[in-house]
Length: 239
Image (cartoon, rainbow, N blue to C red; front, top):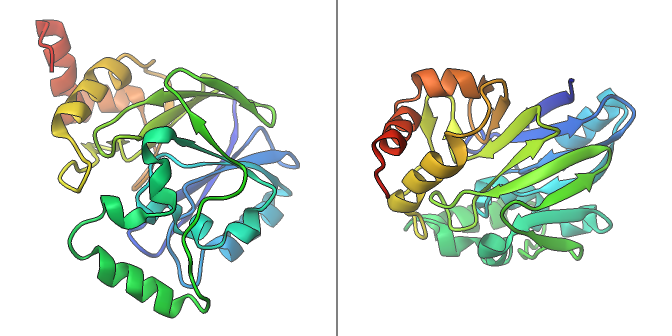
């Protein structure tokens, strides 16, 4: 089993925008188109041309602006594209500042001033909410969405054909996403790691929201946050 997996790294916050397809010449899924000036869509289009792909759907792992900007500021570019996000973060597509820190307005003002257009954040017309355990066939790939709150209330990860895990800002190589921003919860993150992430198969490729690709086996052996969650599970601790 294999997939075509590529990425574009956003200049702002080095967010990974994943491009995932069964193979070249197929429909792909775009994950988390983040922040560039004026947007990332031209860079994404280059990847599509390189692999002869067509966008079939967009998946948003959570509603932070560094994962959504090039989608919600340019919705007309994706007018016929289905977009999937968890209901608990769906409002952030229109109001991203609700989950941002005290300097958020300065960032929003900078982006609006430099993007070459009157940026008005809104969700795409074909936006759908996903729930925990929901399975959806996107193109020729089977996505299983897992609700993993903590970084945000609506954070999700996605299993793709039992081969790869899009982990957003829940799980990084050697780290996890922060929980100190508005709507974040350390308690929820601990529970998500313990009950949703630590039980996943070792052989999964892990595609995080920031940083390098990793595997579940590596994270179980080396990620101190995940190891702690696994230890809590063994000890019967309820978070």
